[in-house]
Image (cartoon, rainbow, N blue to C red; front, side):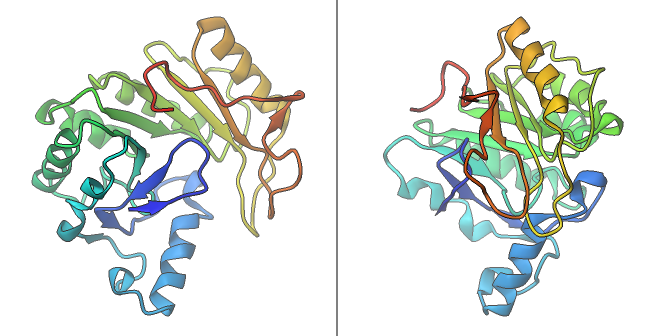
Length: 238
């Protein structure tokens, strides 16, 4: 596992690497860029670049941390990619259950496969399930997320690419919002963010504003209306 600068987690764990693009949010994928760099550096784990690759040897690496951590699972891939067998996903879930001192944050864009496979997985309370939404075309993914029995169901709206007036957070326990980062970052209007924050306040849902986005982090990158919004579900690891 690797420490990370992602504000809403402590470290990352990648039992798979690589992915394929399926929607507008994937256009400037940071993981693809990082994977290609790692391949050029000669790192064995990234010998296939950004082609989907399973790493069964990584399954017990999380046990190296005895102190409780928040762990982002598959920051360099998508656990519910169609080419990852159910048997491997189930094995990842088994290893997560064996480390109850940690909270594992799983995040996917593939809501349809999440809903399909969810009944075949054992959802221990330390497994949080998240789903990425970037625009109106992706909103139906939240319906897929609602079908899972995860104790915390969260929505990551990053990169936010447009206004989302039809958002429905019923059954959602946490919301993360952020603009796109990197050299090709598409701009985000804070007026798209404010209604999301206000809806979270109205529904008493923890709201996490990650960043305004852009090529480089500027002073105040995580400030929205004069405040840092780093709220977590009540049972998170501090």
